[in-house]
Image (tube, rainbow, N blue to C red; front, side, top):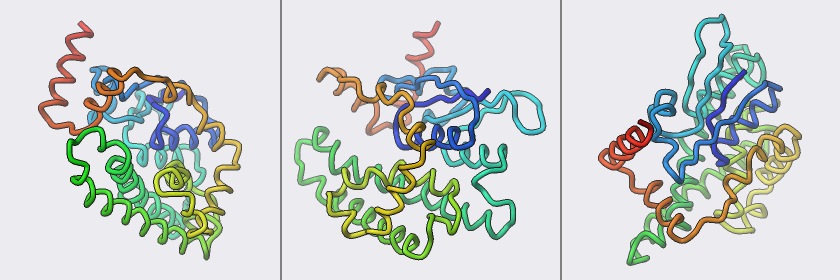
Length: 254
């Protein structure tokens, strides 16, 4: 059994989609990132970067003690190695997939996250919205560039890393499917090959099921006070703030 520490976000969906594609049994444990679950001592023992998702596999390859892994890319790569699926075994095929997997981790996810922050969230965090102009232009522009990279790749390939569906697709789709909300409804007209791929990945039953795992957790309506507290916790974190949150969580758990 695999224990999954999760919240319904693009990075969380990567793991549940992979688990569904592989047909692995798993249990889901909520990590409510808006209310500080990521700072609880028991979670930090699994994920020292105080970020979800994370997993604990009580039956790792080769036996031994339960294995804890954090970082969505590492988790999905581990599951591919564990099951022998969605990651080729030959060197050329493996690194063809891994380069796109790492591309997502270093580019698409962080750039879309930053673009979303400046375009949608940061307005409520600053007094002068003009401060956001450069950041919004910088990161939305980079997302546009990355869409062009994907569209060009998908114009010549059925899937992101070549002829076969792979972990590269599972890692990238949960972010790419949100492009219309982040940019505008013209993004699919501008990038038709990307749109074709988003639709085809999204039509897979395992992807649909993984995307729906505890979706209701993220759709709970928050009061204004709860929303302010959530944003204060999620954004502008520093070492001092993180350390205090950890200490408060440890004190509350005593």
